[in-house]
Length: 240
Ligand SMILES: NC(=O)c1ccc[n+]([C@@H]2O[C@H](COP(=O)([O-])OP(=O)(O)OC[C@H]3O[C@@H](n4cnc5c(N)ncnc54)[C@H](OP(=O)(O)O)[C@@H]3O)[C@@H](O)[C@H]2O)c1
Image (cartoon, rainbow, N blue to C red):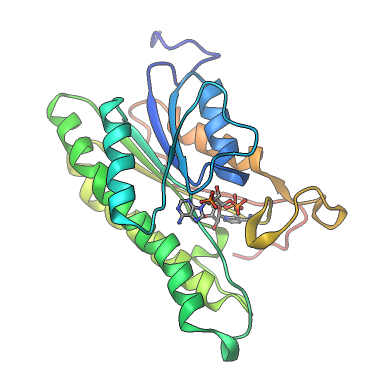
């Protein structure tokens, strides 16, 4: 008997989610909220239909001042967990890759993850001094360990994000920080200017499927550390 209601496994938890205006991040915010967590959600734009019951703050993960303000708000609310989900992609042959493409993708996926992590860690360390644990979840991709044609900048950024995730695990184990990498395959979202719900994406994961993986990691008992979750649509070719 842990005292945690089975239908609200995250009751009492306060969880910050980046990139929560649409797609996977929005689904994560909704699923965690439904599981009983207080969610502090951030993105550059407000979600189109609002986020009932969820605190939303404007956030640009490429801007350190914005990240600091977001972290302060979440930490003041008692944040015990951070989900780094904000991400963008640019795809095309290596011959056409530009400095602008590189900066946009790396600033969001790599620097953004680094900055958000960096500004929550002191509070997580301080929680440990009070006998409390914390959790960092980074939404990377199945391409954090593989590459593909026309994916040079994106895959490189996801490999780098995996390195940041694992470094946080090395350092955080000394102050009660659990770290989880969530690695989705093809997911039907607005990613790369896509329109969700089109017939050719019918077999893709739904954002909600990925959010369930995040919930699984965050709701694991205190003695369980879920290092990574790889989740694919059944139709995606198997690549190990
Ligand atoms: N879709 C896939 O197939 C897939 C597969 C594997 C991994 N992923 C990863 O999953 C994550 C979410 O992607 P998605 O598929 O849900 O894409 P999406 O529908 O385009 O959503 C991306 C989210 O990131 C936010 N974002 C982008 N730049 C930001 C910034 N500078 N600061 C704060 N928020 C920012 C966006 O909000 P604003 O524009 O309002 O800021 C939006 O809420 C990404 O890390 C992506 O790499 C996606």
